[in-house]
Image (cartoon, rainbow, N blue to C red; front, top):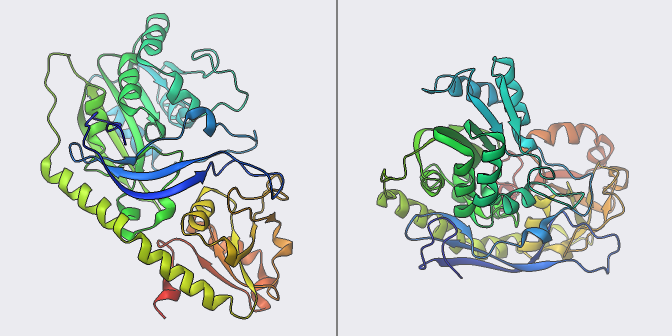
Amino acid sequence: MGRCLVCASADVETLLALGPQPVASHFMPVRDGTTVEHDLALASCPTCGVTQLAKPFPYRDLVRLYGWITYREPETHLDAVVERICTLPGIDTRSRVAGVTFKDKTTLERLSKRGFGHVWSLDARADLGATDANADIETVQALLTPEKAAAIAAQRGAVDLLVVRHIAEHAEAPSRFMAALSALLAPGGVMVVEVPDCTGNLTRQDYSMIWEEHALYLTPDSAPQLAAAAGCAVVDLQVHPFRFEDVIVLYARKQDGAVALPSPDRAAVVRNRDLARRYAAAFPDWTARYRALFENLTRDGRRLAAYGAGHLTCAFVNFHGLSDYFACVVDDMPQKQGLFLPKCRLPIVPRAQLSATQVRTCFFGLAPELEEKIIASNRDYVAAGGQFYSMFVDSARSIRTLLAT
């Protein structure tokens, strides 16, 4: 692979090669259709310790095919984030505030309610020149270059506070993207960067964490490297707990160019490298165990079903090569029904087609907090002997409970 996406080190180690994989959001209208695929591999940098994709997918290939696809991020912690922002030295209601994408809207709204009067957000089309009707964060991270950011700052004014939620991990060139964010900041300004905390999934060895849209897989040890790439010093780092993935919120202040930023902590780098290596090394064993389990579950001729036609199901089935054991993917979103999950080509069907006579076991491929609601809406399936488990380790119904029996 090439250089580290964050620190540009040339000594990056590829840990886990998953072969050609599709863009999970590119649902196929016909089973025998074609879809874009690129090699997907996880790597680790020995210099900064950041776990990353060996080669991110080109952003143009990540643009959604369907305008109805949306992504939601956890928000119950945002009141606490705004409280912390309001305590930062140099930040008050007179501060100029900006967001980068639609994901920052609810934080900006909270700040406006607190009396901040100079609040705005980048527009992918007006500010960055995006032309695709479905352009989203994958396009923003690519088009927001340092040069473009400097021009926007010159036109609209550099800001004192920049809110950056769940886009930094998508950046195909993170060092360039972080430099662009810095160009939007006034001297001494603060950026609040929120990213997923991958510590839990790396530790649990849950491979559905890997997503072609995420170039970086950060932990509290490695996330500060984003601030360094932006020429910023970390003033606070908080981890907010959630199911499946916690979130890291990094508060970093722009430094004078003459100020030397601290080098990566070597102990932290070693911890991250060891964690990523164990994660990658365990993949073949988990794959073999899943296949053995599914052979047993389908010995009576009934195949399996997945519930939730999203990137998590796509990853679980495709990475481990499990498509032959599944009959279908159930999804309650009408727009997805009738389409096919990319690569594995499983049909996406409504829950009315979930029949215990044909599918004895159904695996959740969605957030654990939704499981009870879905089971309640599928009472007939359960009453007929159908069983629900989860693909994810962080669930009381995890597939791994079956492996332990």
